[in-house]
Amino acid sequence: MNIFKKIAEGIKKTKDNFSKKLFYAFSAKELDDEFYDNLMDALLAADVGVEASDKVIDDLKDRTFRQKIKTPEECKDLLKEILQEEIDFEIPEYEYTPLVLLIAGVNGVGKTTTIGKLAHNFIEEGKTVIVAAADTFRAAASEQLEIWGQRAGVRVIKHGEGSDPAAVVFDTISAAKAHNTDVILIDTAGRLHNKVNLMNELKKICKVVDRELPDADFRKFLVLDATTGQNAVAQAEIFSECIDTDGIILTKLDGTAKGGVVIAISNNLELPVVYVGVGEKIDDLIPFNAEDFINALFE
Image 1 (cartoon, rainbow, N blue to C red):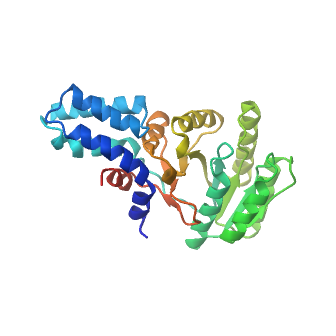
Image 2: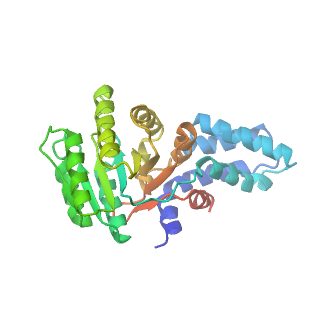
Image 3: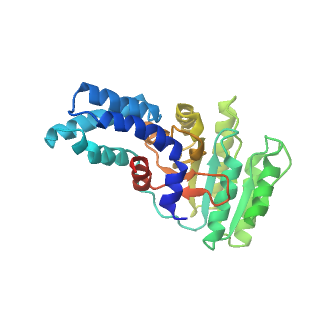
């Protein structure tokens, strides 16, 4: 199955929810207040969020005026263009010097599953992969990670429960150096009840990576659950205070009718969505493509 078909199937619930309200809005005969109110309703129903929706509507009004567009049907392509611009970030190609991906996020968003799927994707591309089980706080975290590691065919480095996460990362890096490994994936704790501890832990892990692998392509990705809607935006803001986040991995996109949160996240945080989870299979984590997403939404 090609990527476009996967994303189209993955956002079916969102598309069905959005397209009904969009059809109603675009059945109007002129670009009046009622049209824009109905369009706002469609965007909010897809969980684009108030701030992002206001921005999209204002931009649409401005462009339709400047381009002398008079009817709703004429501005549909313009709306697609604006929405795509909101989420279309240029993401640099990976450099395997090595590539280090730190995966952060609260418990329950699908971090462990995401790491397993990422490992599988890299193995399929012919890369060598090792995983650091640096969530030493949650009892079952490393065991779950080992199961996914076995499924993906990658080695998982772990220590005992309650041990220093940075020490796990150090040992993983040492093993990666010894075997000239292409990709290092780092799982991290997801507790938010003590933000100071979380911040210190993540910063310590980052220092270890920077010290031991100064030439690595080191990126920090935040995993968010699409089904939580605007709560995902709030989580992202908290983690962005802890680390310089390079991108978002949005899981469970197939399980929600509010996939417009992609736009809310990109708009509020000015961060790219790098991957989306569109199912439970090991190959159901796909690179995010803004054009495919918007086209599937309007298909």
